[in-house]
Image (cartoon, rainbow, N blue to C red; front, side, top):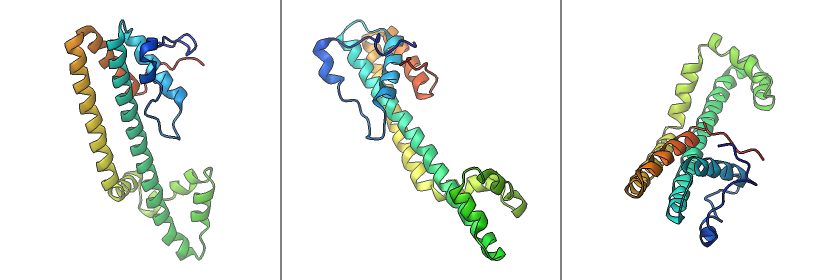
Amino acid sequence: MGRSLAKARKPPAALAKFFDDPPLLPSESRIEYDHLFSAIVDAADPKDAIEWLFIRDIADLSWEIRRERAVKAQVIKSARNEVVENLLTPVDILRGDRTDLKKWQSDPNSRPAIEKQLPDRGHDEPSILAGAYIRAATSIDAIDRRIASYELRRMAALREVAAYSAKLAGQLKAASEAVIDGEFTEAAE
């Protein structure tokens, strides 16, 4: 792993059209996808067109799983922010101003100091996080279902790969788990 994209192996020319359009959203980086794909290619060392196509399927599913995990983290972070805003609002109103809330909303550097006051007001981090999970429960459940669906599809694809080559299936399983967990070495640019 860690091969530069310039030196990265390319699929056979006859398959190029199948590799031109990865499942990227407009906000996602083709370079990051290519790093993930290259890490899987390096681990699997494809020998023929069939192996390249299997790699594409596993890479795409791995990308989707990583995306869903990132979305889930953002949903929880956003819900946590809403909970903190709601906790700060009554305190500011009682004080006759909205200084803490305004600072917390606009100045990321003052957030930690303001949030350190919340336990003194009876709101520790576990209770704030619990409130965030409750607030975002529907979204979290939907994301978890999508992640489970992608995982099942990845496992089914790996079973198909195993029918073709047990060695390749083992390499793809290990490589895809590493990239899903973010433990792969990104190729140098």
